[in-house]
Each structure stands twice: as structure tokens, then as C-alpha cells.
Image (tube, rainbow, N blue to C red; front, side):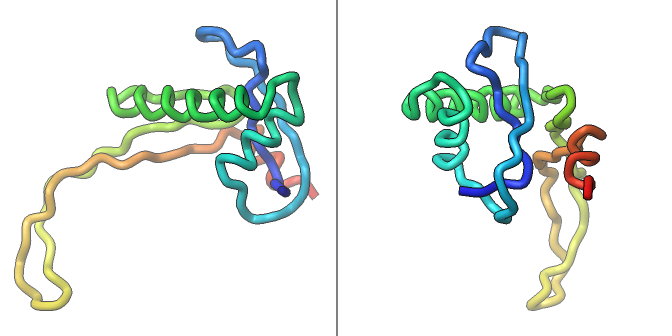
Length: 122
């Protein structure tokens, strides 16, 4: 398991207080949820099962807040936001027929300066 930069929530995760630290392990391009939980367990006093529960809960909380239309700001890491796209006219690429594209919402992430700086250090 390798990752170039990851946010770890501390085991003292309580209510609104979220402390974090950056762990640099390696340079692979991807890390999945179970590897993230494994790394969190290795960096803290949590068991792997507790780390998996914490990772799952964290993503659930972020997703629920975004579903309510709220932004989630993790200082030093970035902001998760919801972007709204208005209904618009489009074309079916196969037939060329005019179609109406429904309004939609999509998740967006804007990285904080600290994270951008970490990724761009040489």
C-alpha cells in the first residue's frame, strides 16, 4: 500500500473537532477504502475494524452533509461542495435529435493551499 498524500482523522475525532495530520507513504497512484483504513489503524491506536468504521462514518457524514446541500470544509485539506447544473437543451449524438437534459447536482472538491503545496513539493 502506497500513497503520496492522505488525510488521517485522529482517533480523538469528537463532534465538530477534527484534528488531522498528513502521512506520506509512497508514490502509487491509488488507494482504496480498505487500504486507507489499514493505514489509519497503523498510524493510530485503532484496531483495523475500528479504523474501517471510522473511514465509513467519515464518508457517510460528508455524503449526508452534501446531500443536504451543505459544503464540508476540512481546514488544510479542502472543501467538498455541491455544484448544480441547470436544465438545458442538448443533442443525441447518435441521431442528432434535440433533447432536454435535466437539471442535476454533482459533487466537487476544491483542494486547500496546504494540500496543493504538499503535492507540489520537490
